[in-house]
Length: 172
Image (cartoon, rainbow, N blue to C red; front, top):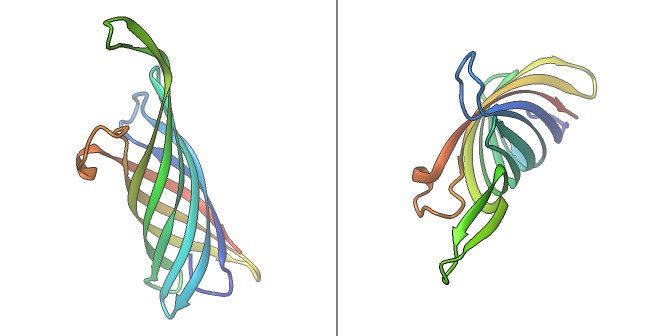
């Protein structure tokens, strides 16, 4: 996603927490919107919002809603490297009910939803496939580390889960 008068971009992506071929895995999709707020030479800084989901067969669906910053460096006229840091609201819907013991020793239904806030850090490589007068279309390959611990760990890297994504973007 290159430096130009085009300041807005939309990315639609395929997301995965696992790359096991031929085995049901944790996959989903996402959409993100970014808007450049500072550009100098080959350096671009943008605000980014994201909405993603991951489906884990038979156990859960994870929804991520994030807000963060994106830095892009133009490697060439058509390609760039990106680094993003974001805060995410993570909603996990389990396909089963959770039960825990209360202080009285009684079993209490905790429901099937978990909520947490988690940081994420990611890297991406994008390549412009074709440009029109007022827009650019391209592909993006990315990875990010997302905290999916539901607040149980203090070390981000201990609780993080690697996410791989591939998508197409439209810059206007």
